Image (tube, rainbow, N blue to C red):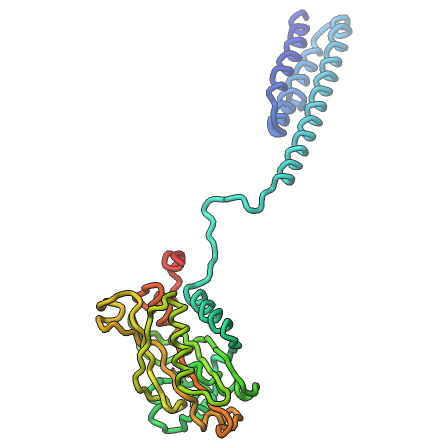
Length: 344
Ligand code: DAH
């Protein structure tokens, strides 16, 4: 009997010591199982009452009941305490939740080199008062060729190997020039517009050729437009893109059926003074063909060539991106190599 009394007071002490160390609900649950469950210490003490005499039971019974009540009360108090603590922590978390906090190993999205250079070109032309236009990548023979003064069986079609679609007369546009016609149909002169976009050609791929690449078409139509307007515009563009007033241009004759005269505009290499691998030791880089819009093309756009004239050009956007960022393989631009893209 004195042993049971001892056990009762020890159990209370033991419970208090362990309870003081409890810091979370899991630990609290463990202590409940140890002391208050059916197989727990209190239940075991209760069982040990059984063999005792009536007098002994009268003495120890109330002691045990008191122990049980005390332990239950301590347990409940701790339970409430933990709940309050947890609520406070949640509140703090919400109050100090920092949306800009750094978290390691995040992958950030970004603009591809294409988009970056396209935006740069767009900004330059917007500053000169140009509009930005778009057009379909699936085009008709009419807009991609005929309206641009390239009738059926014209040898110039061979210059642009075409992806023809199963639908007769439909193709993947080989150039952004059809947007010229679409824009003229819907706008009256004076016209100043550029149209960046993706183009497709049925070509074998290697480091400098791909079956898809991007161009920026340019069109300017007003009264008395001359080739010098075209040259001044291209010079301004190149100087701004490479951020150097020292860049010069030179002009060679070219051939495109939709412009007459047609020119190839080269610019002096911004990367060297005496020849480098970018300009292939020539000091000049070929980038922008253009010319004065052919009267037939103006007519197809619904514009009277006796009143208006204009210039057009086709900037090789893919080539410009490669030049600007010294990318030596065109295929990288359309690949999904994250380590390549992360550099931009
Ligand atoms: N569309 C031509 C091409 O893809 C480039 C071009 C040349 C566009 C002369 C023009 C131009 O607007 O006037 O090769």
